[in-house]
Image (cartoon, rainbow, N blue to C red; front, side, top):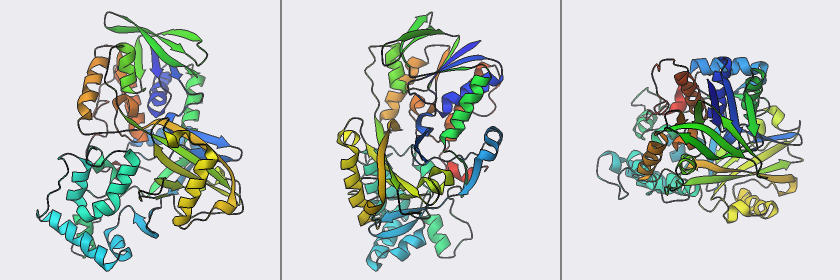
Length: 466
């Protein structure tokens, strides 16, 4: 058996790792010049920056054990601390109802409480479309708190109305299914703790990308191949099976790779167009630009792993200080900051010169209490084109249609965040890759198929094994 995997992100690399351990000849094709996908780490002098707020957690004991073995002493066990910087105040994160009330005015406290009770007692019904994120939050937290916090942050992050966004991912990403548990706890009516995010996580000393560079090295050591700087441009098909794939780099140099099994982790609509050029369905992705700033003359920004910034007129959605995850992310006595800025691919924000964007973010940071202009040393950007699948109402039908086309080929599968067009965690993508590898090796599926791994509507981070 020979296998070809398109995409060297967490899903593709884990699939190849699993196959290489079993002696299968495997080749990975990655369009970037480095591996890791959305989980790569960018080095800038003595500083390291991830693409986003990554950390390794999983409820899969086997996967956790494998990563610990792979990285050994290079894997740190860290504690998570996050907060929300909003309207000149700092709130706890995960959301803590008593904290929100203590930090709010008497008028806002009344509005939030009354709004929740109206929803809980059925006195208020959301005007947003059923199945939308906006309707879900209206019901779970009440309309006033939605308008105050959730709605502006959500619309800034996704670039569309909260009423157009599906609620599919909400239960897995927001720590309280509804405010009831938190309110009862605050009033001492229950001893049950509202479920929350994992307090601890594992993190490599050299950034989250170290997991995947180490995995790639292990794959190559076992005989696997990793081709970077190339992307698929055509499939050779016979009798409803993929026979080979043509890949090219930016200069037009081409190669033809042949195998008996194929796994794609590239965007599923791009895959469908390669298989069927007449395909019209196009899925929407939210892009991210990361403005990475090195600071001189300041040793620490805060004690938070990251800070959310939900205000609509603040350009970034999260402020992160890489050294909070690993002390090796910045030189001793110095620090850095990475700002997550949502945008659309090639729009004004994506293409804006670094220095112009820096002026904007420094002004916004100052309104939040961080005057960093005197300490800025260097600034550069990194980018994620297909960062988040935008799960609009009705998009599930388009995804189903695209995946049906892919399913017409017996030796081809699609998986991962882009491959399934699902907003999944890093470890879920890794488990999907592992499951696909075990499936083609003929091992029985024990509990999950690729499509149903961690598909339950509950907070996944709360069950971490680390």
